[in-house]
Amino acid sequence: MGQEGGGASGRGRCVGRPAGAPKEDGPSGGQFEYLGTVAAGMADSTEVRELVYLVTGGCGFLGEHVVRMLLQREPRLLELRVFDLHLGAWLEELKTGPVQVTAIQGDVTQAHEVAAAVAGAHVVIHTAGLVDVFGRASPETIYEVNVQGTKNVIEACVQTGTRFLVYTSSMEVVGPNIKGHHFYRGNEDTPYEAVHRHPYPCSKAQAERLVLEANGRKVHGGLPLVTCALRPTGIYGEGHQIMRDFYHQGLRLGGRLFRTIPASVEHGRVYVGNVAWMHVLVARELQQRAALMGGQVYFCYDQSPYKSYEDFNMEFLGPCGLRLVETRPLVPYWLLMLLAALNALLQWLLRPLLLYAPLLNPYTLAVANTAFTVNTDKAQRHFGYEPLFSWEDSRTRTIRWVQAMEGSAR
Ligand SMILES: NC(=O)c1ccc[n+]([C@@H]2O[C@H](COP(=O)([O-])OP(=O)(O)OC[C@H]3O[C@@H](n4cnc5c(N)ncnc54)[C@H](O)[C@@H]3O)[C@@H](O)[C@H]2O)c1
Ligand SMILES: CC(C)[C@@H](O)CC[C@@H](C)[C@H]1CC[C@H]2[C@@H]3[C@H](O)C=C4C[C@@H](O)CC[C@]4(C)[C@H]3CC[C@]12C
Image (tube, rainbow, N blue to C red; front, side):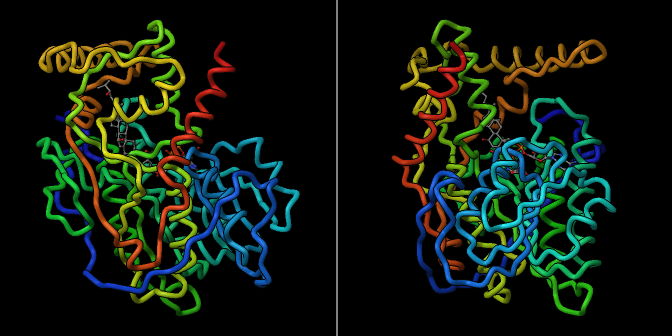
C-alpha cells in the first residue's frame, strides 16, 4: 500500500524482519523526577562531571527534549554537543549552566563533519533523521540522511574511539507492513512480517540494522563499540509538528475535524518526555551493562492509552476547542483511498511548481488504518526504565502546549 517503487534507495522493496535481539533478563532500577526547564536548575549531584555526549538532531522535536533531559538528568555531563543541520536559538539559554553546551551546525551526510563532532565524545545519541511520510523529500534524500548519515556516525565512532552509540529507530522498522497486518500488543520478539516499500520505514530499518550489526566492532584504541536502538511508536508532546498541523486544520474547518479512521483501529503513542528519558537512561546504563544491552532493540512505551490516531489527538485538541465529527468515518474507505491517490497524483504533477504535501496520502492512510500497539517491559527489565511522566501529566503538558499555540493562533 505504500508509495510505489519507494525502496530506501528508491529502488525496489526492502524486506525482511529487522534484526531482533536474543532474549535476556536483567535487574530493574530506580526512577527520577524531570524538571520542565533548564532554568529549574540542574539535578543535584556530587558526581564528577567528566562525560562528553553528542546528540545529533538535537534541535528537532525529540532532540530538544533529549538535550534538555540530559542537562537535567545526567549529573556526570561535562560537555553536551548539539549537532544539527538547523540550530535553534533556544540553545543560547542553555549556556548558562555548569555543563558546556556546544552547538555544532552540521550535516550527518558529510562524514568529515560528523567525525569532527564525534571526536572525543564518550556517548553519541543519534536522533538526526528525515522523518518524511508526506513526500516532501525524495527517496534518495531520505536514504542519504537516514542510512548514509547513520553509516557516517558509526564510522566516526569507530575512527575516533567513541564506544557508546544509541540510535533513535522507530516502530516503523517493524510495521505496519505493506500488507496491512495489525500489530496488536506486540513486543520486541513478536513475529511480524516486516515488509516495507516506503522510503522512510525502509531507511529506518536499514539504519537500525547497521547500528545493531556494528555492536562489538573494535573502535580506535581497541575496545568494542556498544550500540542499541530505541523504537518509539508515534511520539506526541510539546513541539509535535503533526499535532500542530491537525490543530490548524481544525481551526480552518470551524473547530471541527472529520473522522476518517474507525475508532477501533488502535495506535500506540508515547510522550516525548518519556522517550527522551529512555534515551538518557539507556545511554547511561549501556556503559554499565554492555553485555546485556549491546546490540539490543527496545520499544519506547509509557502509560499513554491505546486509541485510534485521531481519537488520541482529540485528547489534546478537544480541550482546546476542536470537535471530532461523527463516531464513525463519514467517508467510505474506498473513497478515502481514491482521495489519497488523487493527493499523490497532485503532488507529482505540482512538484515542478510547488510542494503539495497534505496529511492524506496512500501511505499515511494505510498506516493510520492499521492497528499498531506495543505491550512490553523489556526496557524496564534490562535497564530499569520507568516512565517519568504519567499519562495524566503527559496529557496536561501537551494540552498546555496546544493552548499556548492557540494563544498565538488567535
Ligand atoms: N516523531 C515521531 O513520532 C517519531 C517516532 C519514532 C521515531 N522517530 C525518530 O526520532 C528521530 C527524531 O524525529 P523527530 O520527530 O524529532 O523529527 P524532527 O524532524 O523534528 O527532528 C529531526 C532533526 O534532525 C535534523 N536533521 C535532519 N537532517 C539532518 C542532517 N542531514 N544533518 C543533521 N541534522 C539533520 C533536523 O534538522 C531536525 O532537527 C528520527 O530519527 C525519527 O525517525 C520519530
Ligand atoms: C488523513 C487521515 C488519514 C489521518 O488520520 C492521517 C494520520 C497520519 C498523518 C498519521 C497516522 C499514523 C502516523 C505515523 C505513526 O504515528 C508513526 C510514525 C513513525 C515515526 O517514526 C514517524 C512518524 C510516523 C510515520 C507517523 C506519521 C503520521 C501518521 C502517518
